[in-house]
Image (cartoon, rainbow, N blue to C red; front, side, top):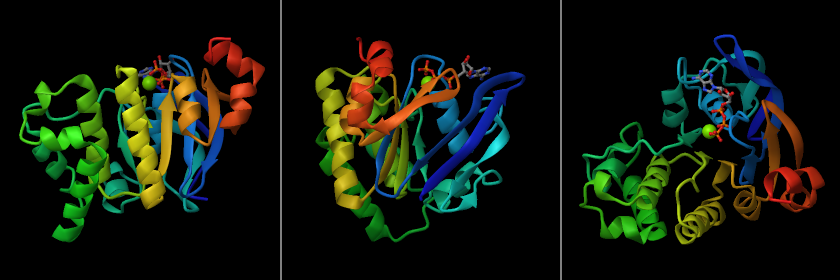
Length: 243
Ligand SMILES: Nc1ncnc2c1ncn2[C@@H]1O[C@H](COP(=O)(O)OP(=O)(O)OP(=O)(O)O)[C@@H](O)[C@H]1O
Ligand SMILES: [Mg+2]
């Protein structure tokens, strides 16, 4: 087991956002967490990435095990340095006044690796997202929203971790770009055995992309199973797949 979340409960001040959720991910899997607005998806990812208050909630029960060891005392930068996991947050967070190339270079800063390895990651990012290569000298703020989203994913790939978590990567993307992005992610999953946890409101797309998933509803997991099972689950159909 790569990641095991056990009875995780978190709160912001006295607002409880997750009431004790449990799920797990194996190495090399693509797993999705789907749920409506306010379900607790972002709270889950921020907690896994060990971000701290006030943006992220505080854990008051349960545990997060990474390869069997608790992450509760781990700092976010340690997760990147040790190449354990990397989060692509909601809303991109790229540096608009830097070029595409500079944004990608910056992501390697925490990496203690050979220059050759960095070149390899860069080749990978540019082969997955040719648009970024074409625009590598362009200031990032002048990229389209979809291209900025690709850059955010590209930056996560530059960190060299084998596990990435994505918070609503489809947000604001036209269908074609959205499918391009998921195809690129699937390709690195196949090529590199990258483990992927993707959080989505767009249940249809998420279930097409992932092999299994969990449904989060107001801080609780209410269903889980293979994508096929979830697609055929009556409650999931009604609530998340438009009947
Ligand atoms: N900084 C915060 N302070 C207080 N409450 C918060 C904070 N961030 C989130 N919450 C609350 O925690 C709950 C879960 O929010 P969260 O952002 O995790 O939902 P989400 O599933 O990501 O929703 P969305 O699809 O809208 O992004 C919500 O009720 C929200 O109001
Ligand atoms: Mg969210």
